[in-house]
Image 1 (cartoon, one colour):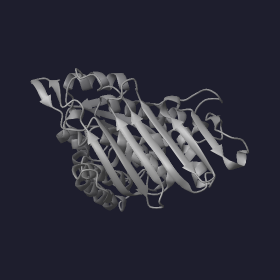
Image 2 (cartoon, rainbow, N blue to C red):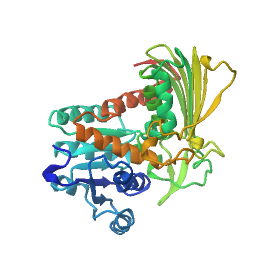
Image 3 (cartoon, rainbow, N blue to C red):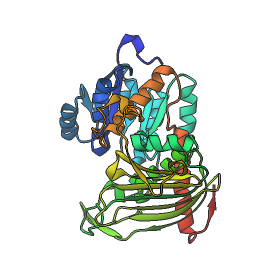
Length: 379
């Protein structure tokens, strides 16, 4: 499949119109304005189950049309890209059908709810790629300029040998026991709780920043509020509220991981610290334009604050003058641009479905370790 079949813009459909559907819609609407060299796109279709809600969302987000049936995208020749922003239990079904239909596919993280589903998706993506059909999983934090700069520092050897990593992703939207039941708290729809929602981001960043995979896992899960009020009364919460893990990478680096959706006072606190033999960096998503760096060559103690808004910093050439900070939403626009560039150039986008599977295997190992009382699991 060519990037612009029949000489027209690539037609895009987003399946899901809520939180992630809104973020992805914003990206598809703006990608051409900030990345003019990317293939042109047309927002063809927004899909959701609630007819009135999806129709209203389509109008607000700039979509040409809407549908309540995701299968309708498979039959339309004017749709080339299917962007899956549904709850996790639908990721595999929609993505597999879209790939079979010859559509390029983006899937929000985590890739799937289980390792088995993720493995099926990888096989389908590999088969589709032989026909020029591309696929990607949406770990948008790879496109935070500060984290892209951090990856560059590791690649350049500025930190020396990485020894220790600290990863935490803390939120508090479930800290109140009166917070209502949602699909994210049911294992059959979400797969897992804080572990899959937040831990998937953290594990992918560990893989991405270090350029290696997790080889060994031990972990623990907790559900602090076992029941919540749903439409039909009190329902059991069947996923975790918080998770902890100790991870060892293939090179021997050791990482600690903590994720929570009940960390009172924390709103979107993703923090990454990497310590090597020759330097270190630390990052906080709530100050996402800043990277704090220390290297031995600096000749001074402590960390130096780098405001990552200079033209030479990753992704900044598309945006504003120095010092004019970027936001969380910009990562999705850059993600869309990277995906379109890969499609146009005939190469595999990253993170790939294989990258998503690698994360899924770590998450499953944390769950297995918890079932076995914190036992160490080799991957």
